[in-house]
Length: 143
Image (cartoon, rainbow, N blue to C red):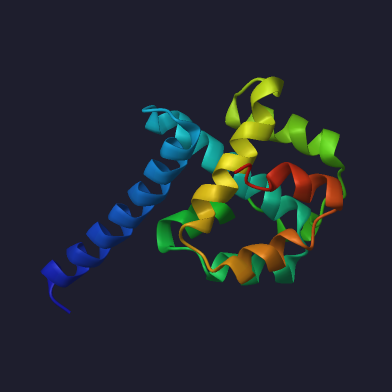
């Protein structure tokens, strides 16, 4: 493989990650891409930590390379699933995203909507259906 091909693959991975972050920013109606990245990362991590290992792995397999890296960053598969309710989900999400409690529902739903632009609806539904109803409701896009 030539050096150009390797760079091209990395450029594509970076472009894809930027596309995801831009879609989160658009759903959040912000130009702040750092904020959008924090929210996406918080969404990925709170979802990942609430799912069983097998479900996390199946979900991650559908993610683009760099987003998959964000998903797995800091993950300890020996400690999941973490059994927390919607209130604890909110606390974890607001802490990880560095947002106010008031913004959690909007940010979580907007991120689900952005991710739904890139993954098949059946895949999103399958992973969300593994969550307790009150968390699933919090993550549902508000259209």
